[in-house]
Amino acid sequence: MTRDVRAAVFRPDDERIDEAVELLDSLGADPVPDPMLAVEPTGETPAPGDYVVMTSKTGVELVAEWGWEPGDATLVAIGERTARAMREAGWEVDLVPDEYSSAGLVRALEADVADARVEVARSDHGSDVLTDGLADAGAEVHETVLYRLVRPAGSGESAELAAGGELDAVIFTSSLTVEHFLDAAADRGVREEAVAGLDDAVVGVIGEPTRETAESHGVAVDVVPENASFEALATETVEEAAPSYRE
Image 1 (tube, rainbow, N blue to C red):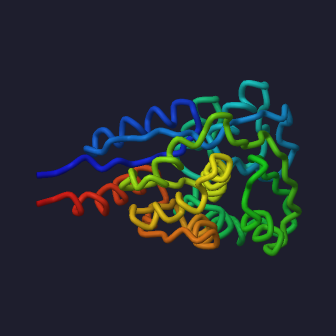
Image 2: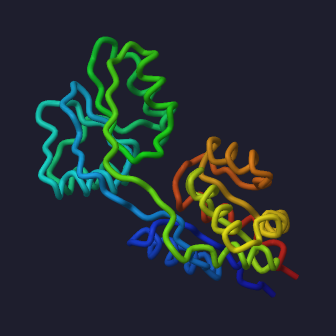
């Protein structure tokens, strides 16, 4: 017999959390949606550049709504989800790296950007791996913050469940979701208990930077999928947790 895996997920409170819940349902899990990210637009748009790098669907949708156009710039997307949003905005995508990460973007661009102006348009929590890597490759790098990521008021139900040993799995999609989860736990007075509760759950993270953040806060990580997509992360995390409930 199999008991549903109770899995907490922390995606933003928009279609992404809905898609996450739908996926977890399809995997036979019992989803606990607890959005840990909310988007606060800055109103800024990307500056001109020889290359314009977009790192999220959210950023694309915001600047498209504000009427921004890429002009003659080489347009780069961090992954296929971002690229689809660009195409839906009517833009031609010139490059999507094989690895959907900041490091993957650097590897895809480093041979071509010496002396080029590279505009990086993203949230206020973007990784220095991207900007430093492009600068090291000889690019003139400019960054525009399109939106800020904040913790929504009222978040933290999952932290209390973790503290009570009531979660089988947690799915962290960024370093910021880890930090906001722990902040929410602290606000509710259960940070130590929540971290202890995660020791008894399967903890899945989207990539190595998120693993490093989690482990720096005392959270042991069990799953880091080779393919840095939410579908792979959710699937592998639920599959890792599921055998505990088989008889």
